[in-house]
Length: 221
Image 1 (cartoon, one colour):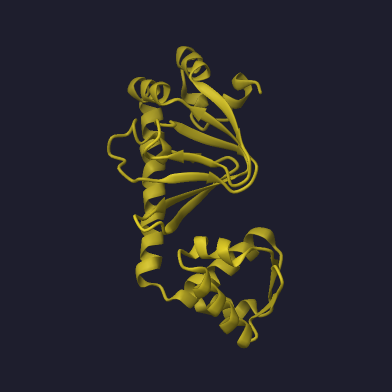
Image 2 (cartoon, helix red, strand yellow; image 1 turned 90 degrees about the horizontal axis):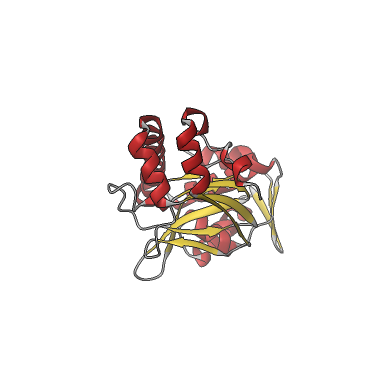
């Protein structure tokens, strides 16, 4: 894959000088990951700033007990700054990254990104604005876990998938749903049965069909 073509898609490419563009090209690699492949852990060598060219990446945390908490997703055209914790010292959140599907991404090495931040204020602003956006999302997720009723969180997930795909039939395992709403599979199964009992959804093997979208939306406060 032609790195020189890929880096032109980075959000800050047009604000770089010619020397800075050359630094970026030399300090960038193209990587591919298969579905469910682990990408990055906080204890690993710093990955740097990543940009998803194709596919989707799940960003999550793992507790000492092994419980996963999904923070957000990075899809095509998105960047992640939390993978560059060694560059921005204020980032102390321990996150894991995994490919949700076959994924292609561009990784700007930590040293290269640090150099660009040091010599270009607009790159530094991009980095801090992105980190602020991501941390706002993390805070929202924590608020949902701590304060939102589980039926609301479950309804929000179903509606978000519907809005993303435009399909009323959702093909997603209960295990995958549990990771998204940060709960146990058994809890998800019980809530889905409750929704089905109300006539809001229909559960078939491997497929959940939304029957009453308005009722689900009313649960979302």
